[in-house]
Length: 389
Image (cartoon, rainbow, N blue to C red; front, side, top):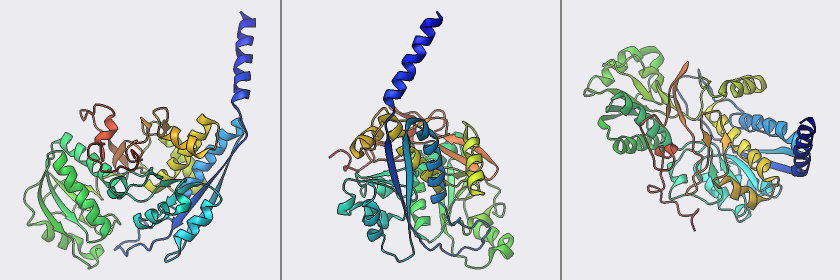
């Protein structure tokens, strides 16, 4: 019996030694600094290392696994200042590695993806939530680890439907992100049979820190009866002053109140607390949504290298988009990629600053293949053809 156990252990050790191979993986991080719009409060300033911090923690995780397998990881970082030439920076980075994590807005991401040098590259979008990037503006060399706006709005609509809060009123800002989120919310409301009884554009420029208790009740007084007030305010400008100041006492959601997001400091289940602690220890601040997307992008590459035992681009990409790929993302379900548009499937926490209220997809929202595909563009809704050509 002992001989049999020893023999089995030796066979396992032998197979592991055969499976090991010296693999060197260099990943590029490319960021375009974009000026943030002025907001009424600087209570929650955007960290200077947002995104990069997540990639660095993901790199550390990859290196921990890689030590045993003789896989070595490194990160080449390029930060392009406002108004800089991101295409030129991308070319220089692509000369070093075909694997790029990109923290840049939609137009810049497309410009990089369309470079001849990027034709045979793997680009991971960690900060642009635009639905078009997963739809008619998709690129075959771009994968997305950040949820799209439609994934967030669908998660909120599922929650509202489950609570039977089926009449929405909406306040929205005037910035492009606000308007894009507004469109996503409108489509989700229609998709899930929620009635949008009123919409009102936020036009105040005065200091709400002083007069919110007077202005907001007046501004919301003419809204018809509704079950939930939805706020589309992506930069976090005015929404915080709407809470608890509305004419009618109603739950608030969207950009404030009950917030659908890729990640928040209140996510703790399924081992997430361990990731939160590692991030806090290394970066001395909480992990944010773009940090999580960048961490996931780095871990996607690490997981593919671990399973394929190679740094070959085509083999890595094929594995990532195959049925074999799964990423443990501390969200309670394996994370996988949609083969039709390169979007990472993932549950969406609905939370406030102190707790997660629900995780979408919620129970009862079914799909014939994967319930995560009830969030965002399903294959029948997508006009992305790059991945099937």
